[in-house]
Image (cartoon, rainbow over all chains, first blue to last red; front, side, top):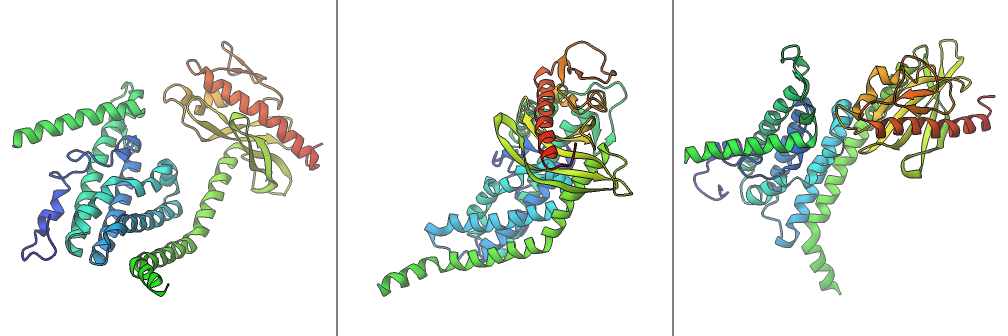
Length: 205
Length: 204
């Protein structure tokens, strides 16, 4: 992890780490609630991903700015406080300007507060690095998470309804897999994708 | 004593300051957007009710915080809305009714005509029924059975013609629990709604 005082800081590395090497969903397996819960269709998954990027970047920046003032026994409460603030703002925004999405996502938007990706990036990166690194790290991890959500949601939506983003992609006569709309579909598909990710990394190494 | 206070401030000034600033940020966001959020809620209710009572021009609250039966024998406070046509005549009522479904509670918007004599249909406000089975309560073929049916007590049958409009509802095959739940919600809520509306003198 890049240090704020180090002479050479790997900005590019901070940005790209979250995309694959430290992808929260496929490589670190943290924050596994949204990938299972909100991936029945691409639209809610993308909304969820963008909300997480917003919260992650904002909380990373705020925590990075106050990193030298943080007392060890008060740091978790400060993390939670800043995360909860941005999640509440994000929730209000969605309820005002994307009521349909807000309704579909329901309790999962407020639940971003306890999403461990955000608190993990705060602890592992933002509380030790400068603002730029923290912001880039937030964008990288958030984007990695969003891409993972969209892959899962895309496959589930196609198999469950034959559509993606409301466009029919499957030929007529395609029988929708009802299981893909249910939690079981999410678990099975996530398991298969994790296996695939493990095979790819094993080959790379 | 003084030392203790000093120690307390030293330890917690950042937390206190941050709480204040963050609280302020949320307050500003809330003030800026709460009107829009409220407007979205009303628009959504109006839209759903308009789908049931198509001649309605406007809706207003007829009974505020009426006690209607909810899931698991509880009572929920909900508004009963009055539908007005272009001339301002009352052409029906709509209310939210809740009950226990197969997986989670089911929330329906039910519409009745101005005398509480006939149902005008229902819409599903929220539910979590099994896709492919209980979920079929949202289909027109099931919902249309309630449209125009006399506002009394329904009974559930397994085999029959869904097209006949009467007090017998043909269950969704493979989803008996959901079908029973919907019929139950109708049966329980209409009794209370009739009672409340006649108490208020809104129906004869």
